[in-house]
Length: 446
Image (cartoon, rainbow, N blue to C red; front, side, top):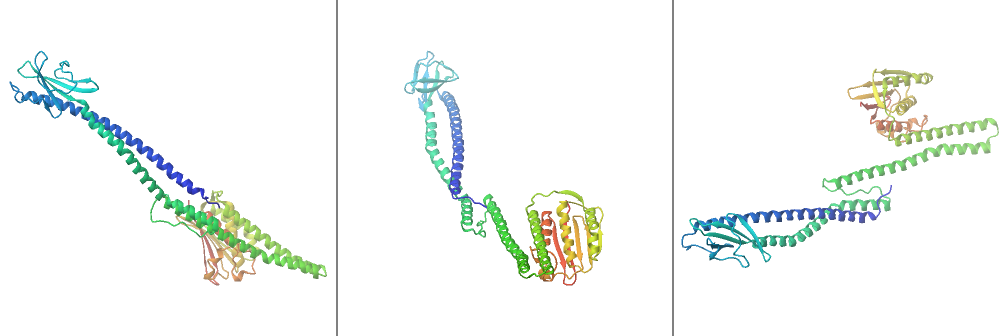
């Protein structure tokens, strides 16, 4: 298995920079849109408010004027007031610099006039019971000064805000990506030190990176277990092959040096043949077990399991008869199962073969079902298995002491367990010394 090299760290940093760049860009665009929209909205609101103030101030001033204009104020709160006679001549009042006092009369309407790059607004009202009229004037540019101040503030504040957002976001991202750096470091240590027991430290946080670290740790558990199984498997195979190879070499050497007649040679050849058959059986079961372990996709189909088991029993009757074994069957009708027919036949065959090795004179095969399970049971009346060995029998090449002189290489039950696992089934054994053994495979109904 290969792990990321040191370039991953720089790759991780570039990801942080890219994320920072993208979200900073979007935030900048959003802020610009918000500020521009705020500017125009504020300007419209300010414009409307200024016009309303101009109108209300003019109305209020007209209402306060008396015959001799004693209460007249020509300037109040940014608004200039001018009184004209019926001929359009100024009688009294003041007006802003550059304003054209001869601007046309426009009773009841707000009028904009631009003079020397300055914009003025004026509002004309007739004075009650008089031929005279009042003009209220304001400098529109004064209103825009407030908006300019707002715009200047935005220009100053926006870069500062962006700097804070970018720096804060970068630091948060860098801290958030720290578990990735730890994952990379652990992967590097595993690669260089070949130590598959190392694991990534898991934090208490419940986030995506914690989940990723947990998944990688689970993967490392699987890899470590695979290496351990492979190492143990290699040791076991070496051990199991050593004995027949040694016997074959010894017998061939003996036959070569000491066999004086055909009878002596035949005896050596018989031993060599038996050991060769044992090696052949060992290799075949190793290959079969390996194929089962590597079979990720099964040829699944719906099987009439009752008929399937019954057919196996029919095909094996002569085998039981030749060994004087009484076969007791209890097969419930109408049981169906979704599974791989070839592997299921191998599972039953291995369990029956195991029972034949150890039974005294009887084997019972039963197939029953519950609402949720299908239960296959193969029981013998042999010597049974000691409690301290019940878990070991599923290990590869394991054979209990009393079975050292029996046929087999100790892979049959390992294959049974592997096939059961592939079918998401549970396999168990109920056995006591001198009470026989009952092997059960429990399949879940689909």
